[in-house]
Length: 281
Image (cartoon, rainbow, N blue to C red; front, side, top):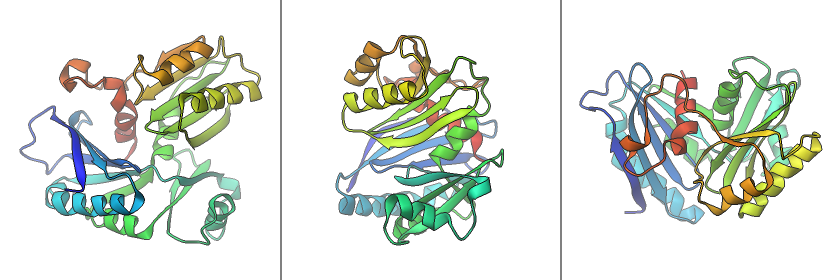
């Protein structure tokens, strides 16, 4: 088998999926699944790891779809959440149907290759424009007849726009495996980006650079985080060394999930996925 099941836990009975929603998060490393009941409470959490290199990962995706498609089609609706590397935010005033690909090509090149998707944010102020290999999109689009497709940057911005942000400024982080999402709010949004990293030093440097750029003190500015980081990890300890107000992001209101249910996993690993599950429709 070209992929590995790293984690699988059912939080509730899954005998009837006809009124349930399934969130499928696709990253470069693999797939994560979040099952949700009609009240958007978590039902299922699964993690699949793909092979490392790009060619083998493509095979892994095809094999996973072949194995899972009949089961996936039992769900009422499927929401596909992408972590495409080629993504950009465009203010609505600057976006047009003819220039979306040009924005991507200016940043990433590729001469218009691949499939471009566009999300309009709920507040109407931005578009998320992202691109992926056409074979990947075609495979994911064939998963379910009732499916939505969006980028994680879009759902995260939607979640953050529900918050009350402190006037003195706040930096939000989502930590993933070799990828972070960063958002700075200080009397309005100042910075929003998805970035790849290799070492803890990379993340600390980026965080400190953004705070410095906007005149915010690392010793006092709140930095709220969630995702795949343990408090004993080298990444957390490196951030803790520089930041005086590093805080864990709370689980969304009304979600019933705790560490005891997760058989050794930390609940905050799944916070970004659950946030996304509450934002898709």
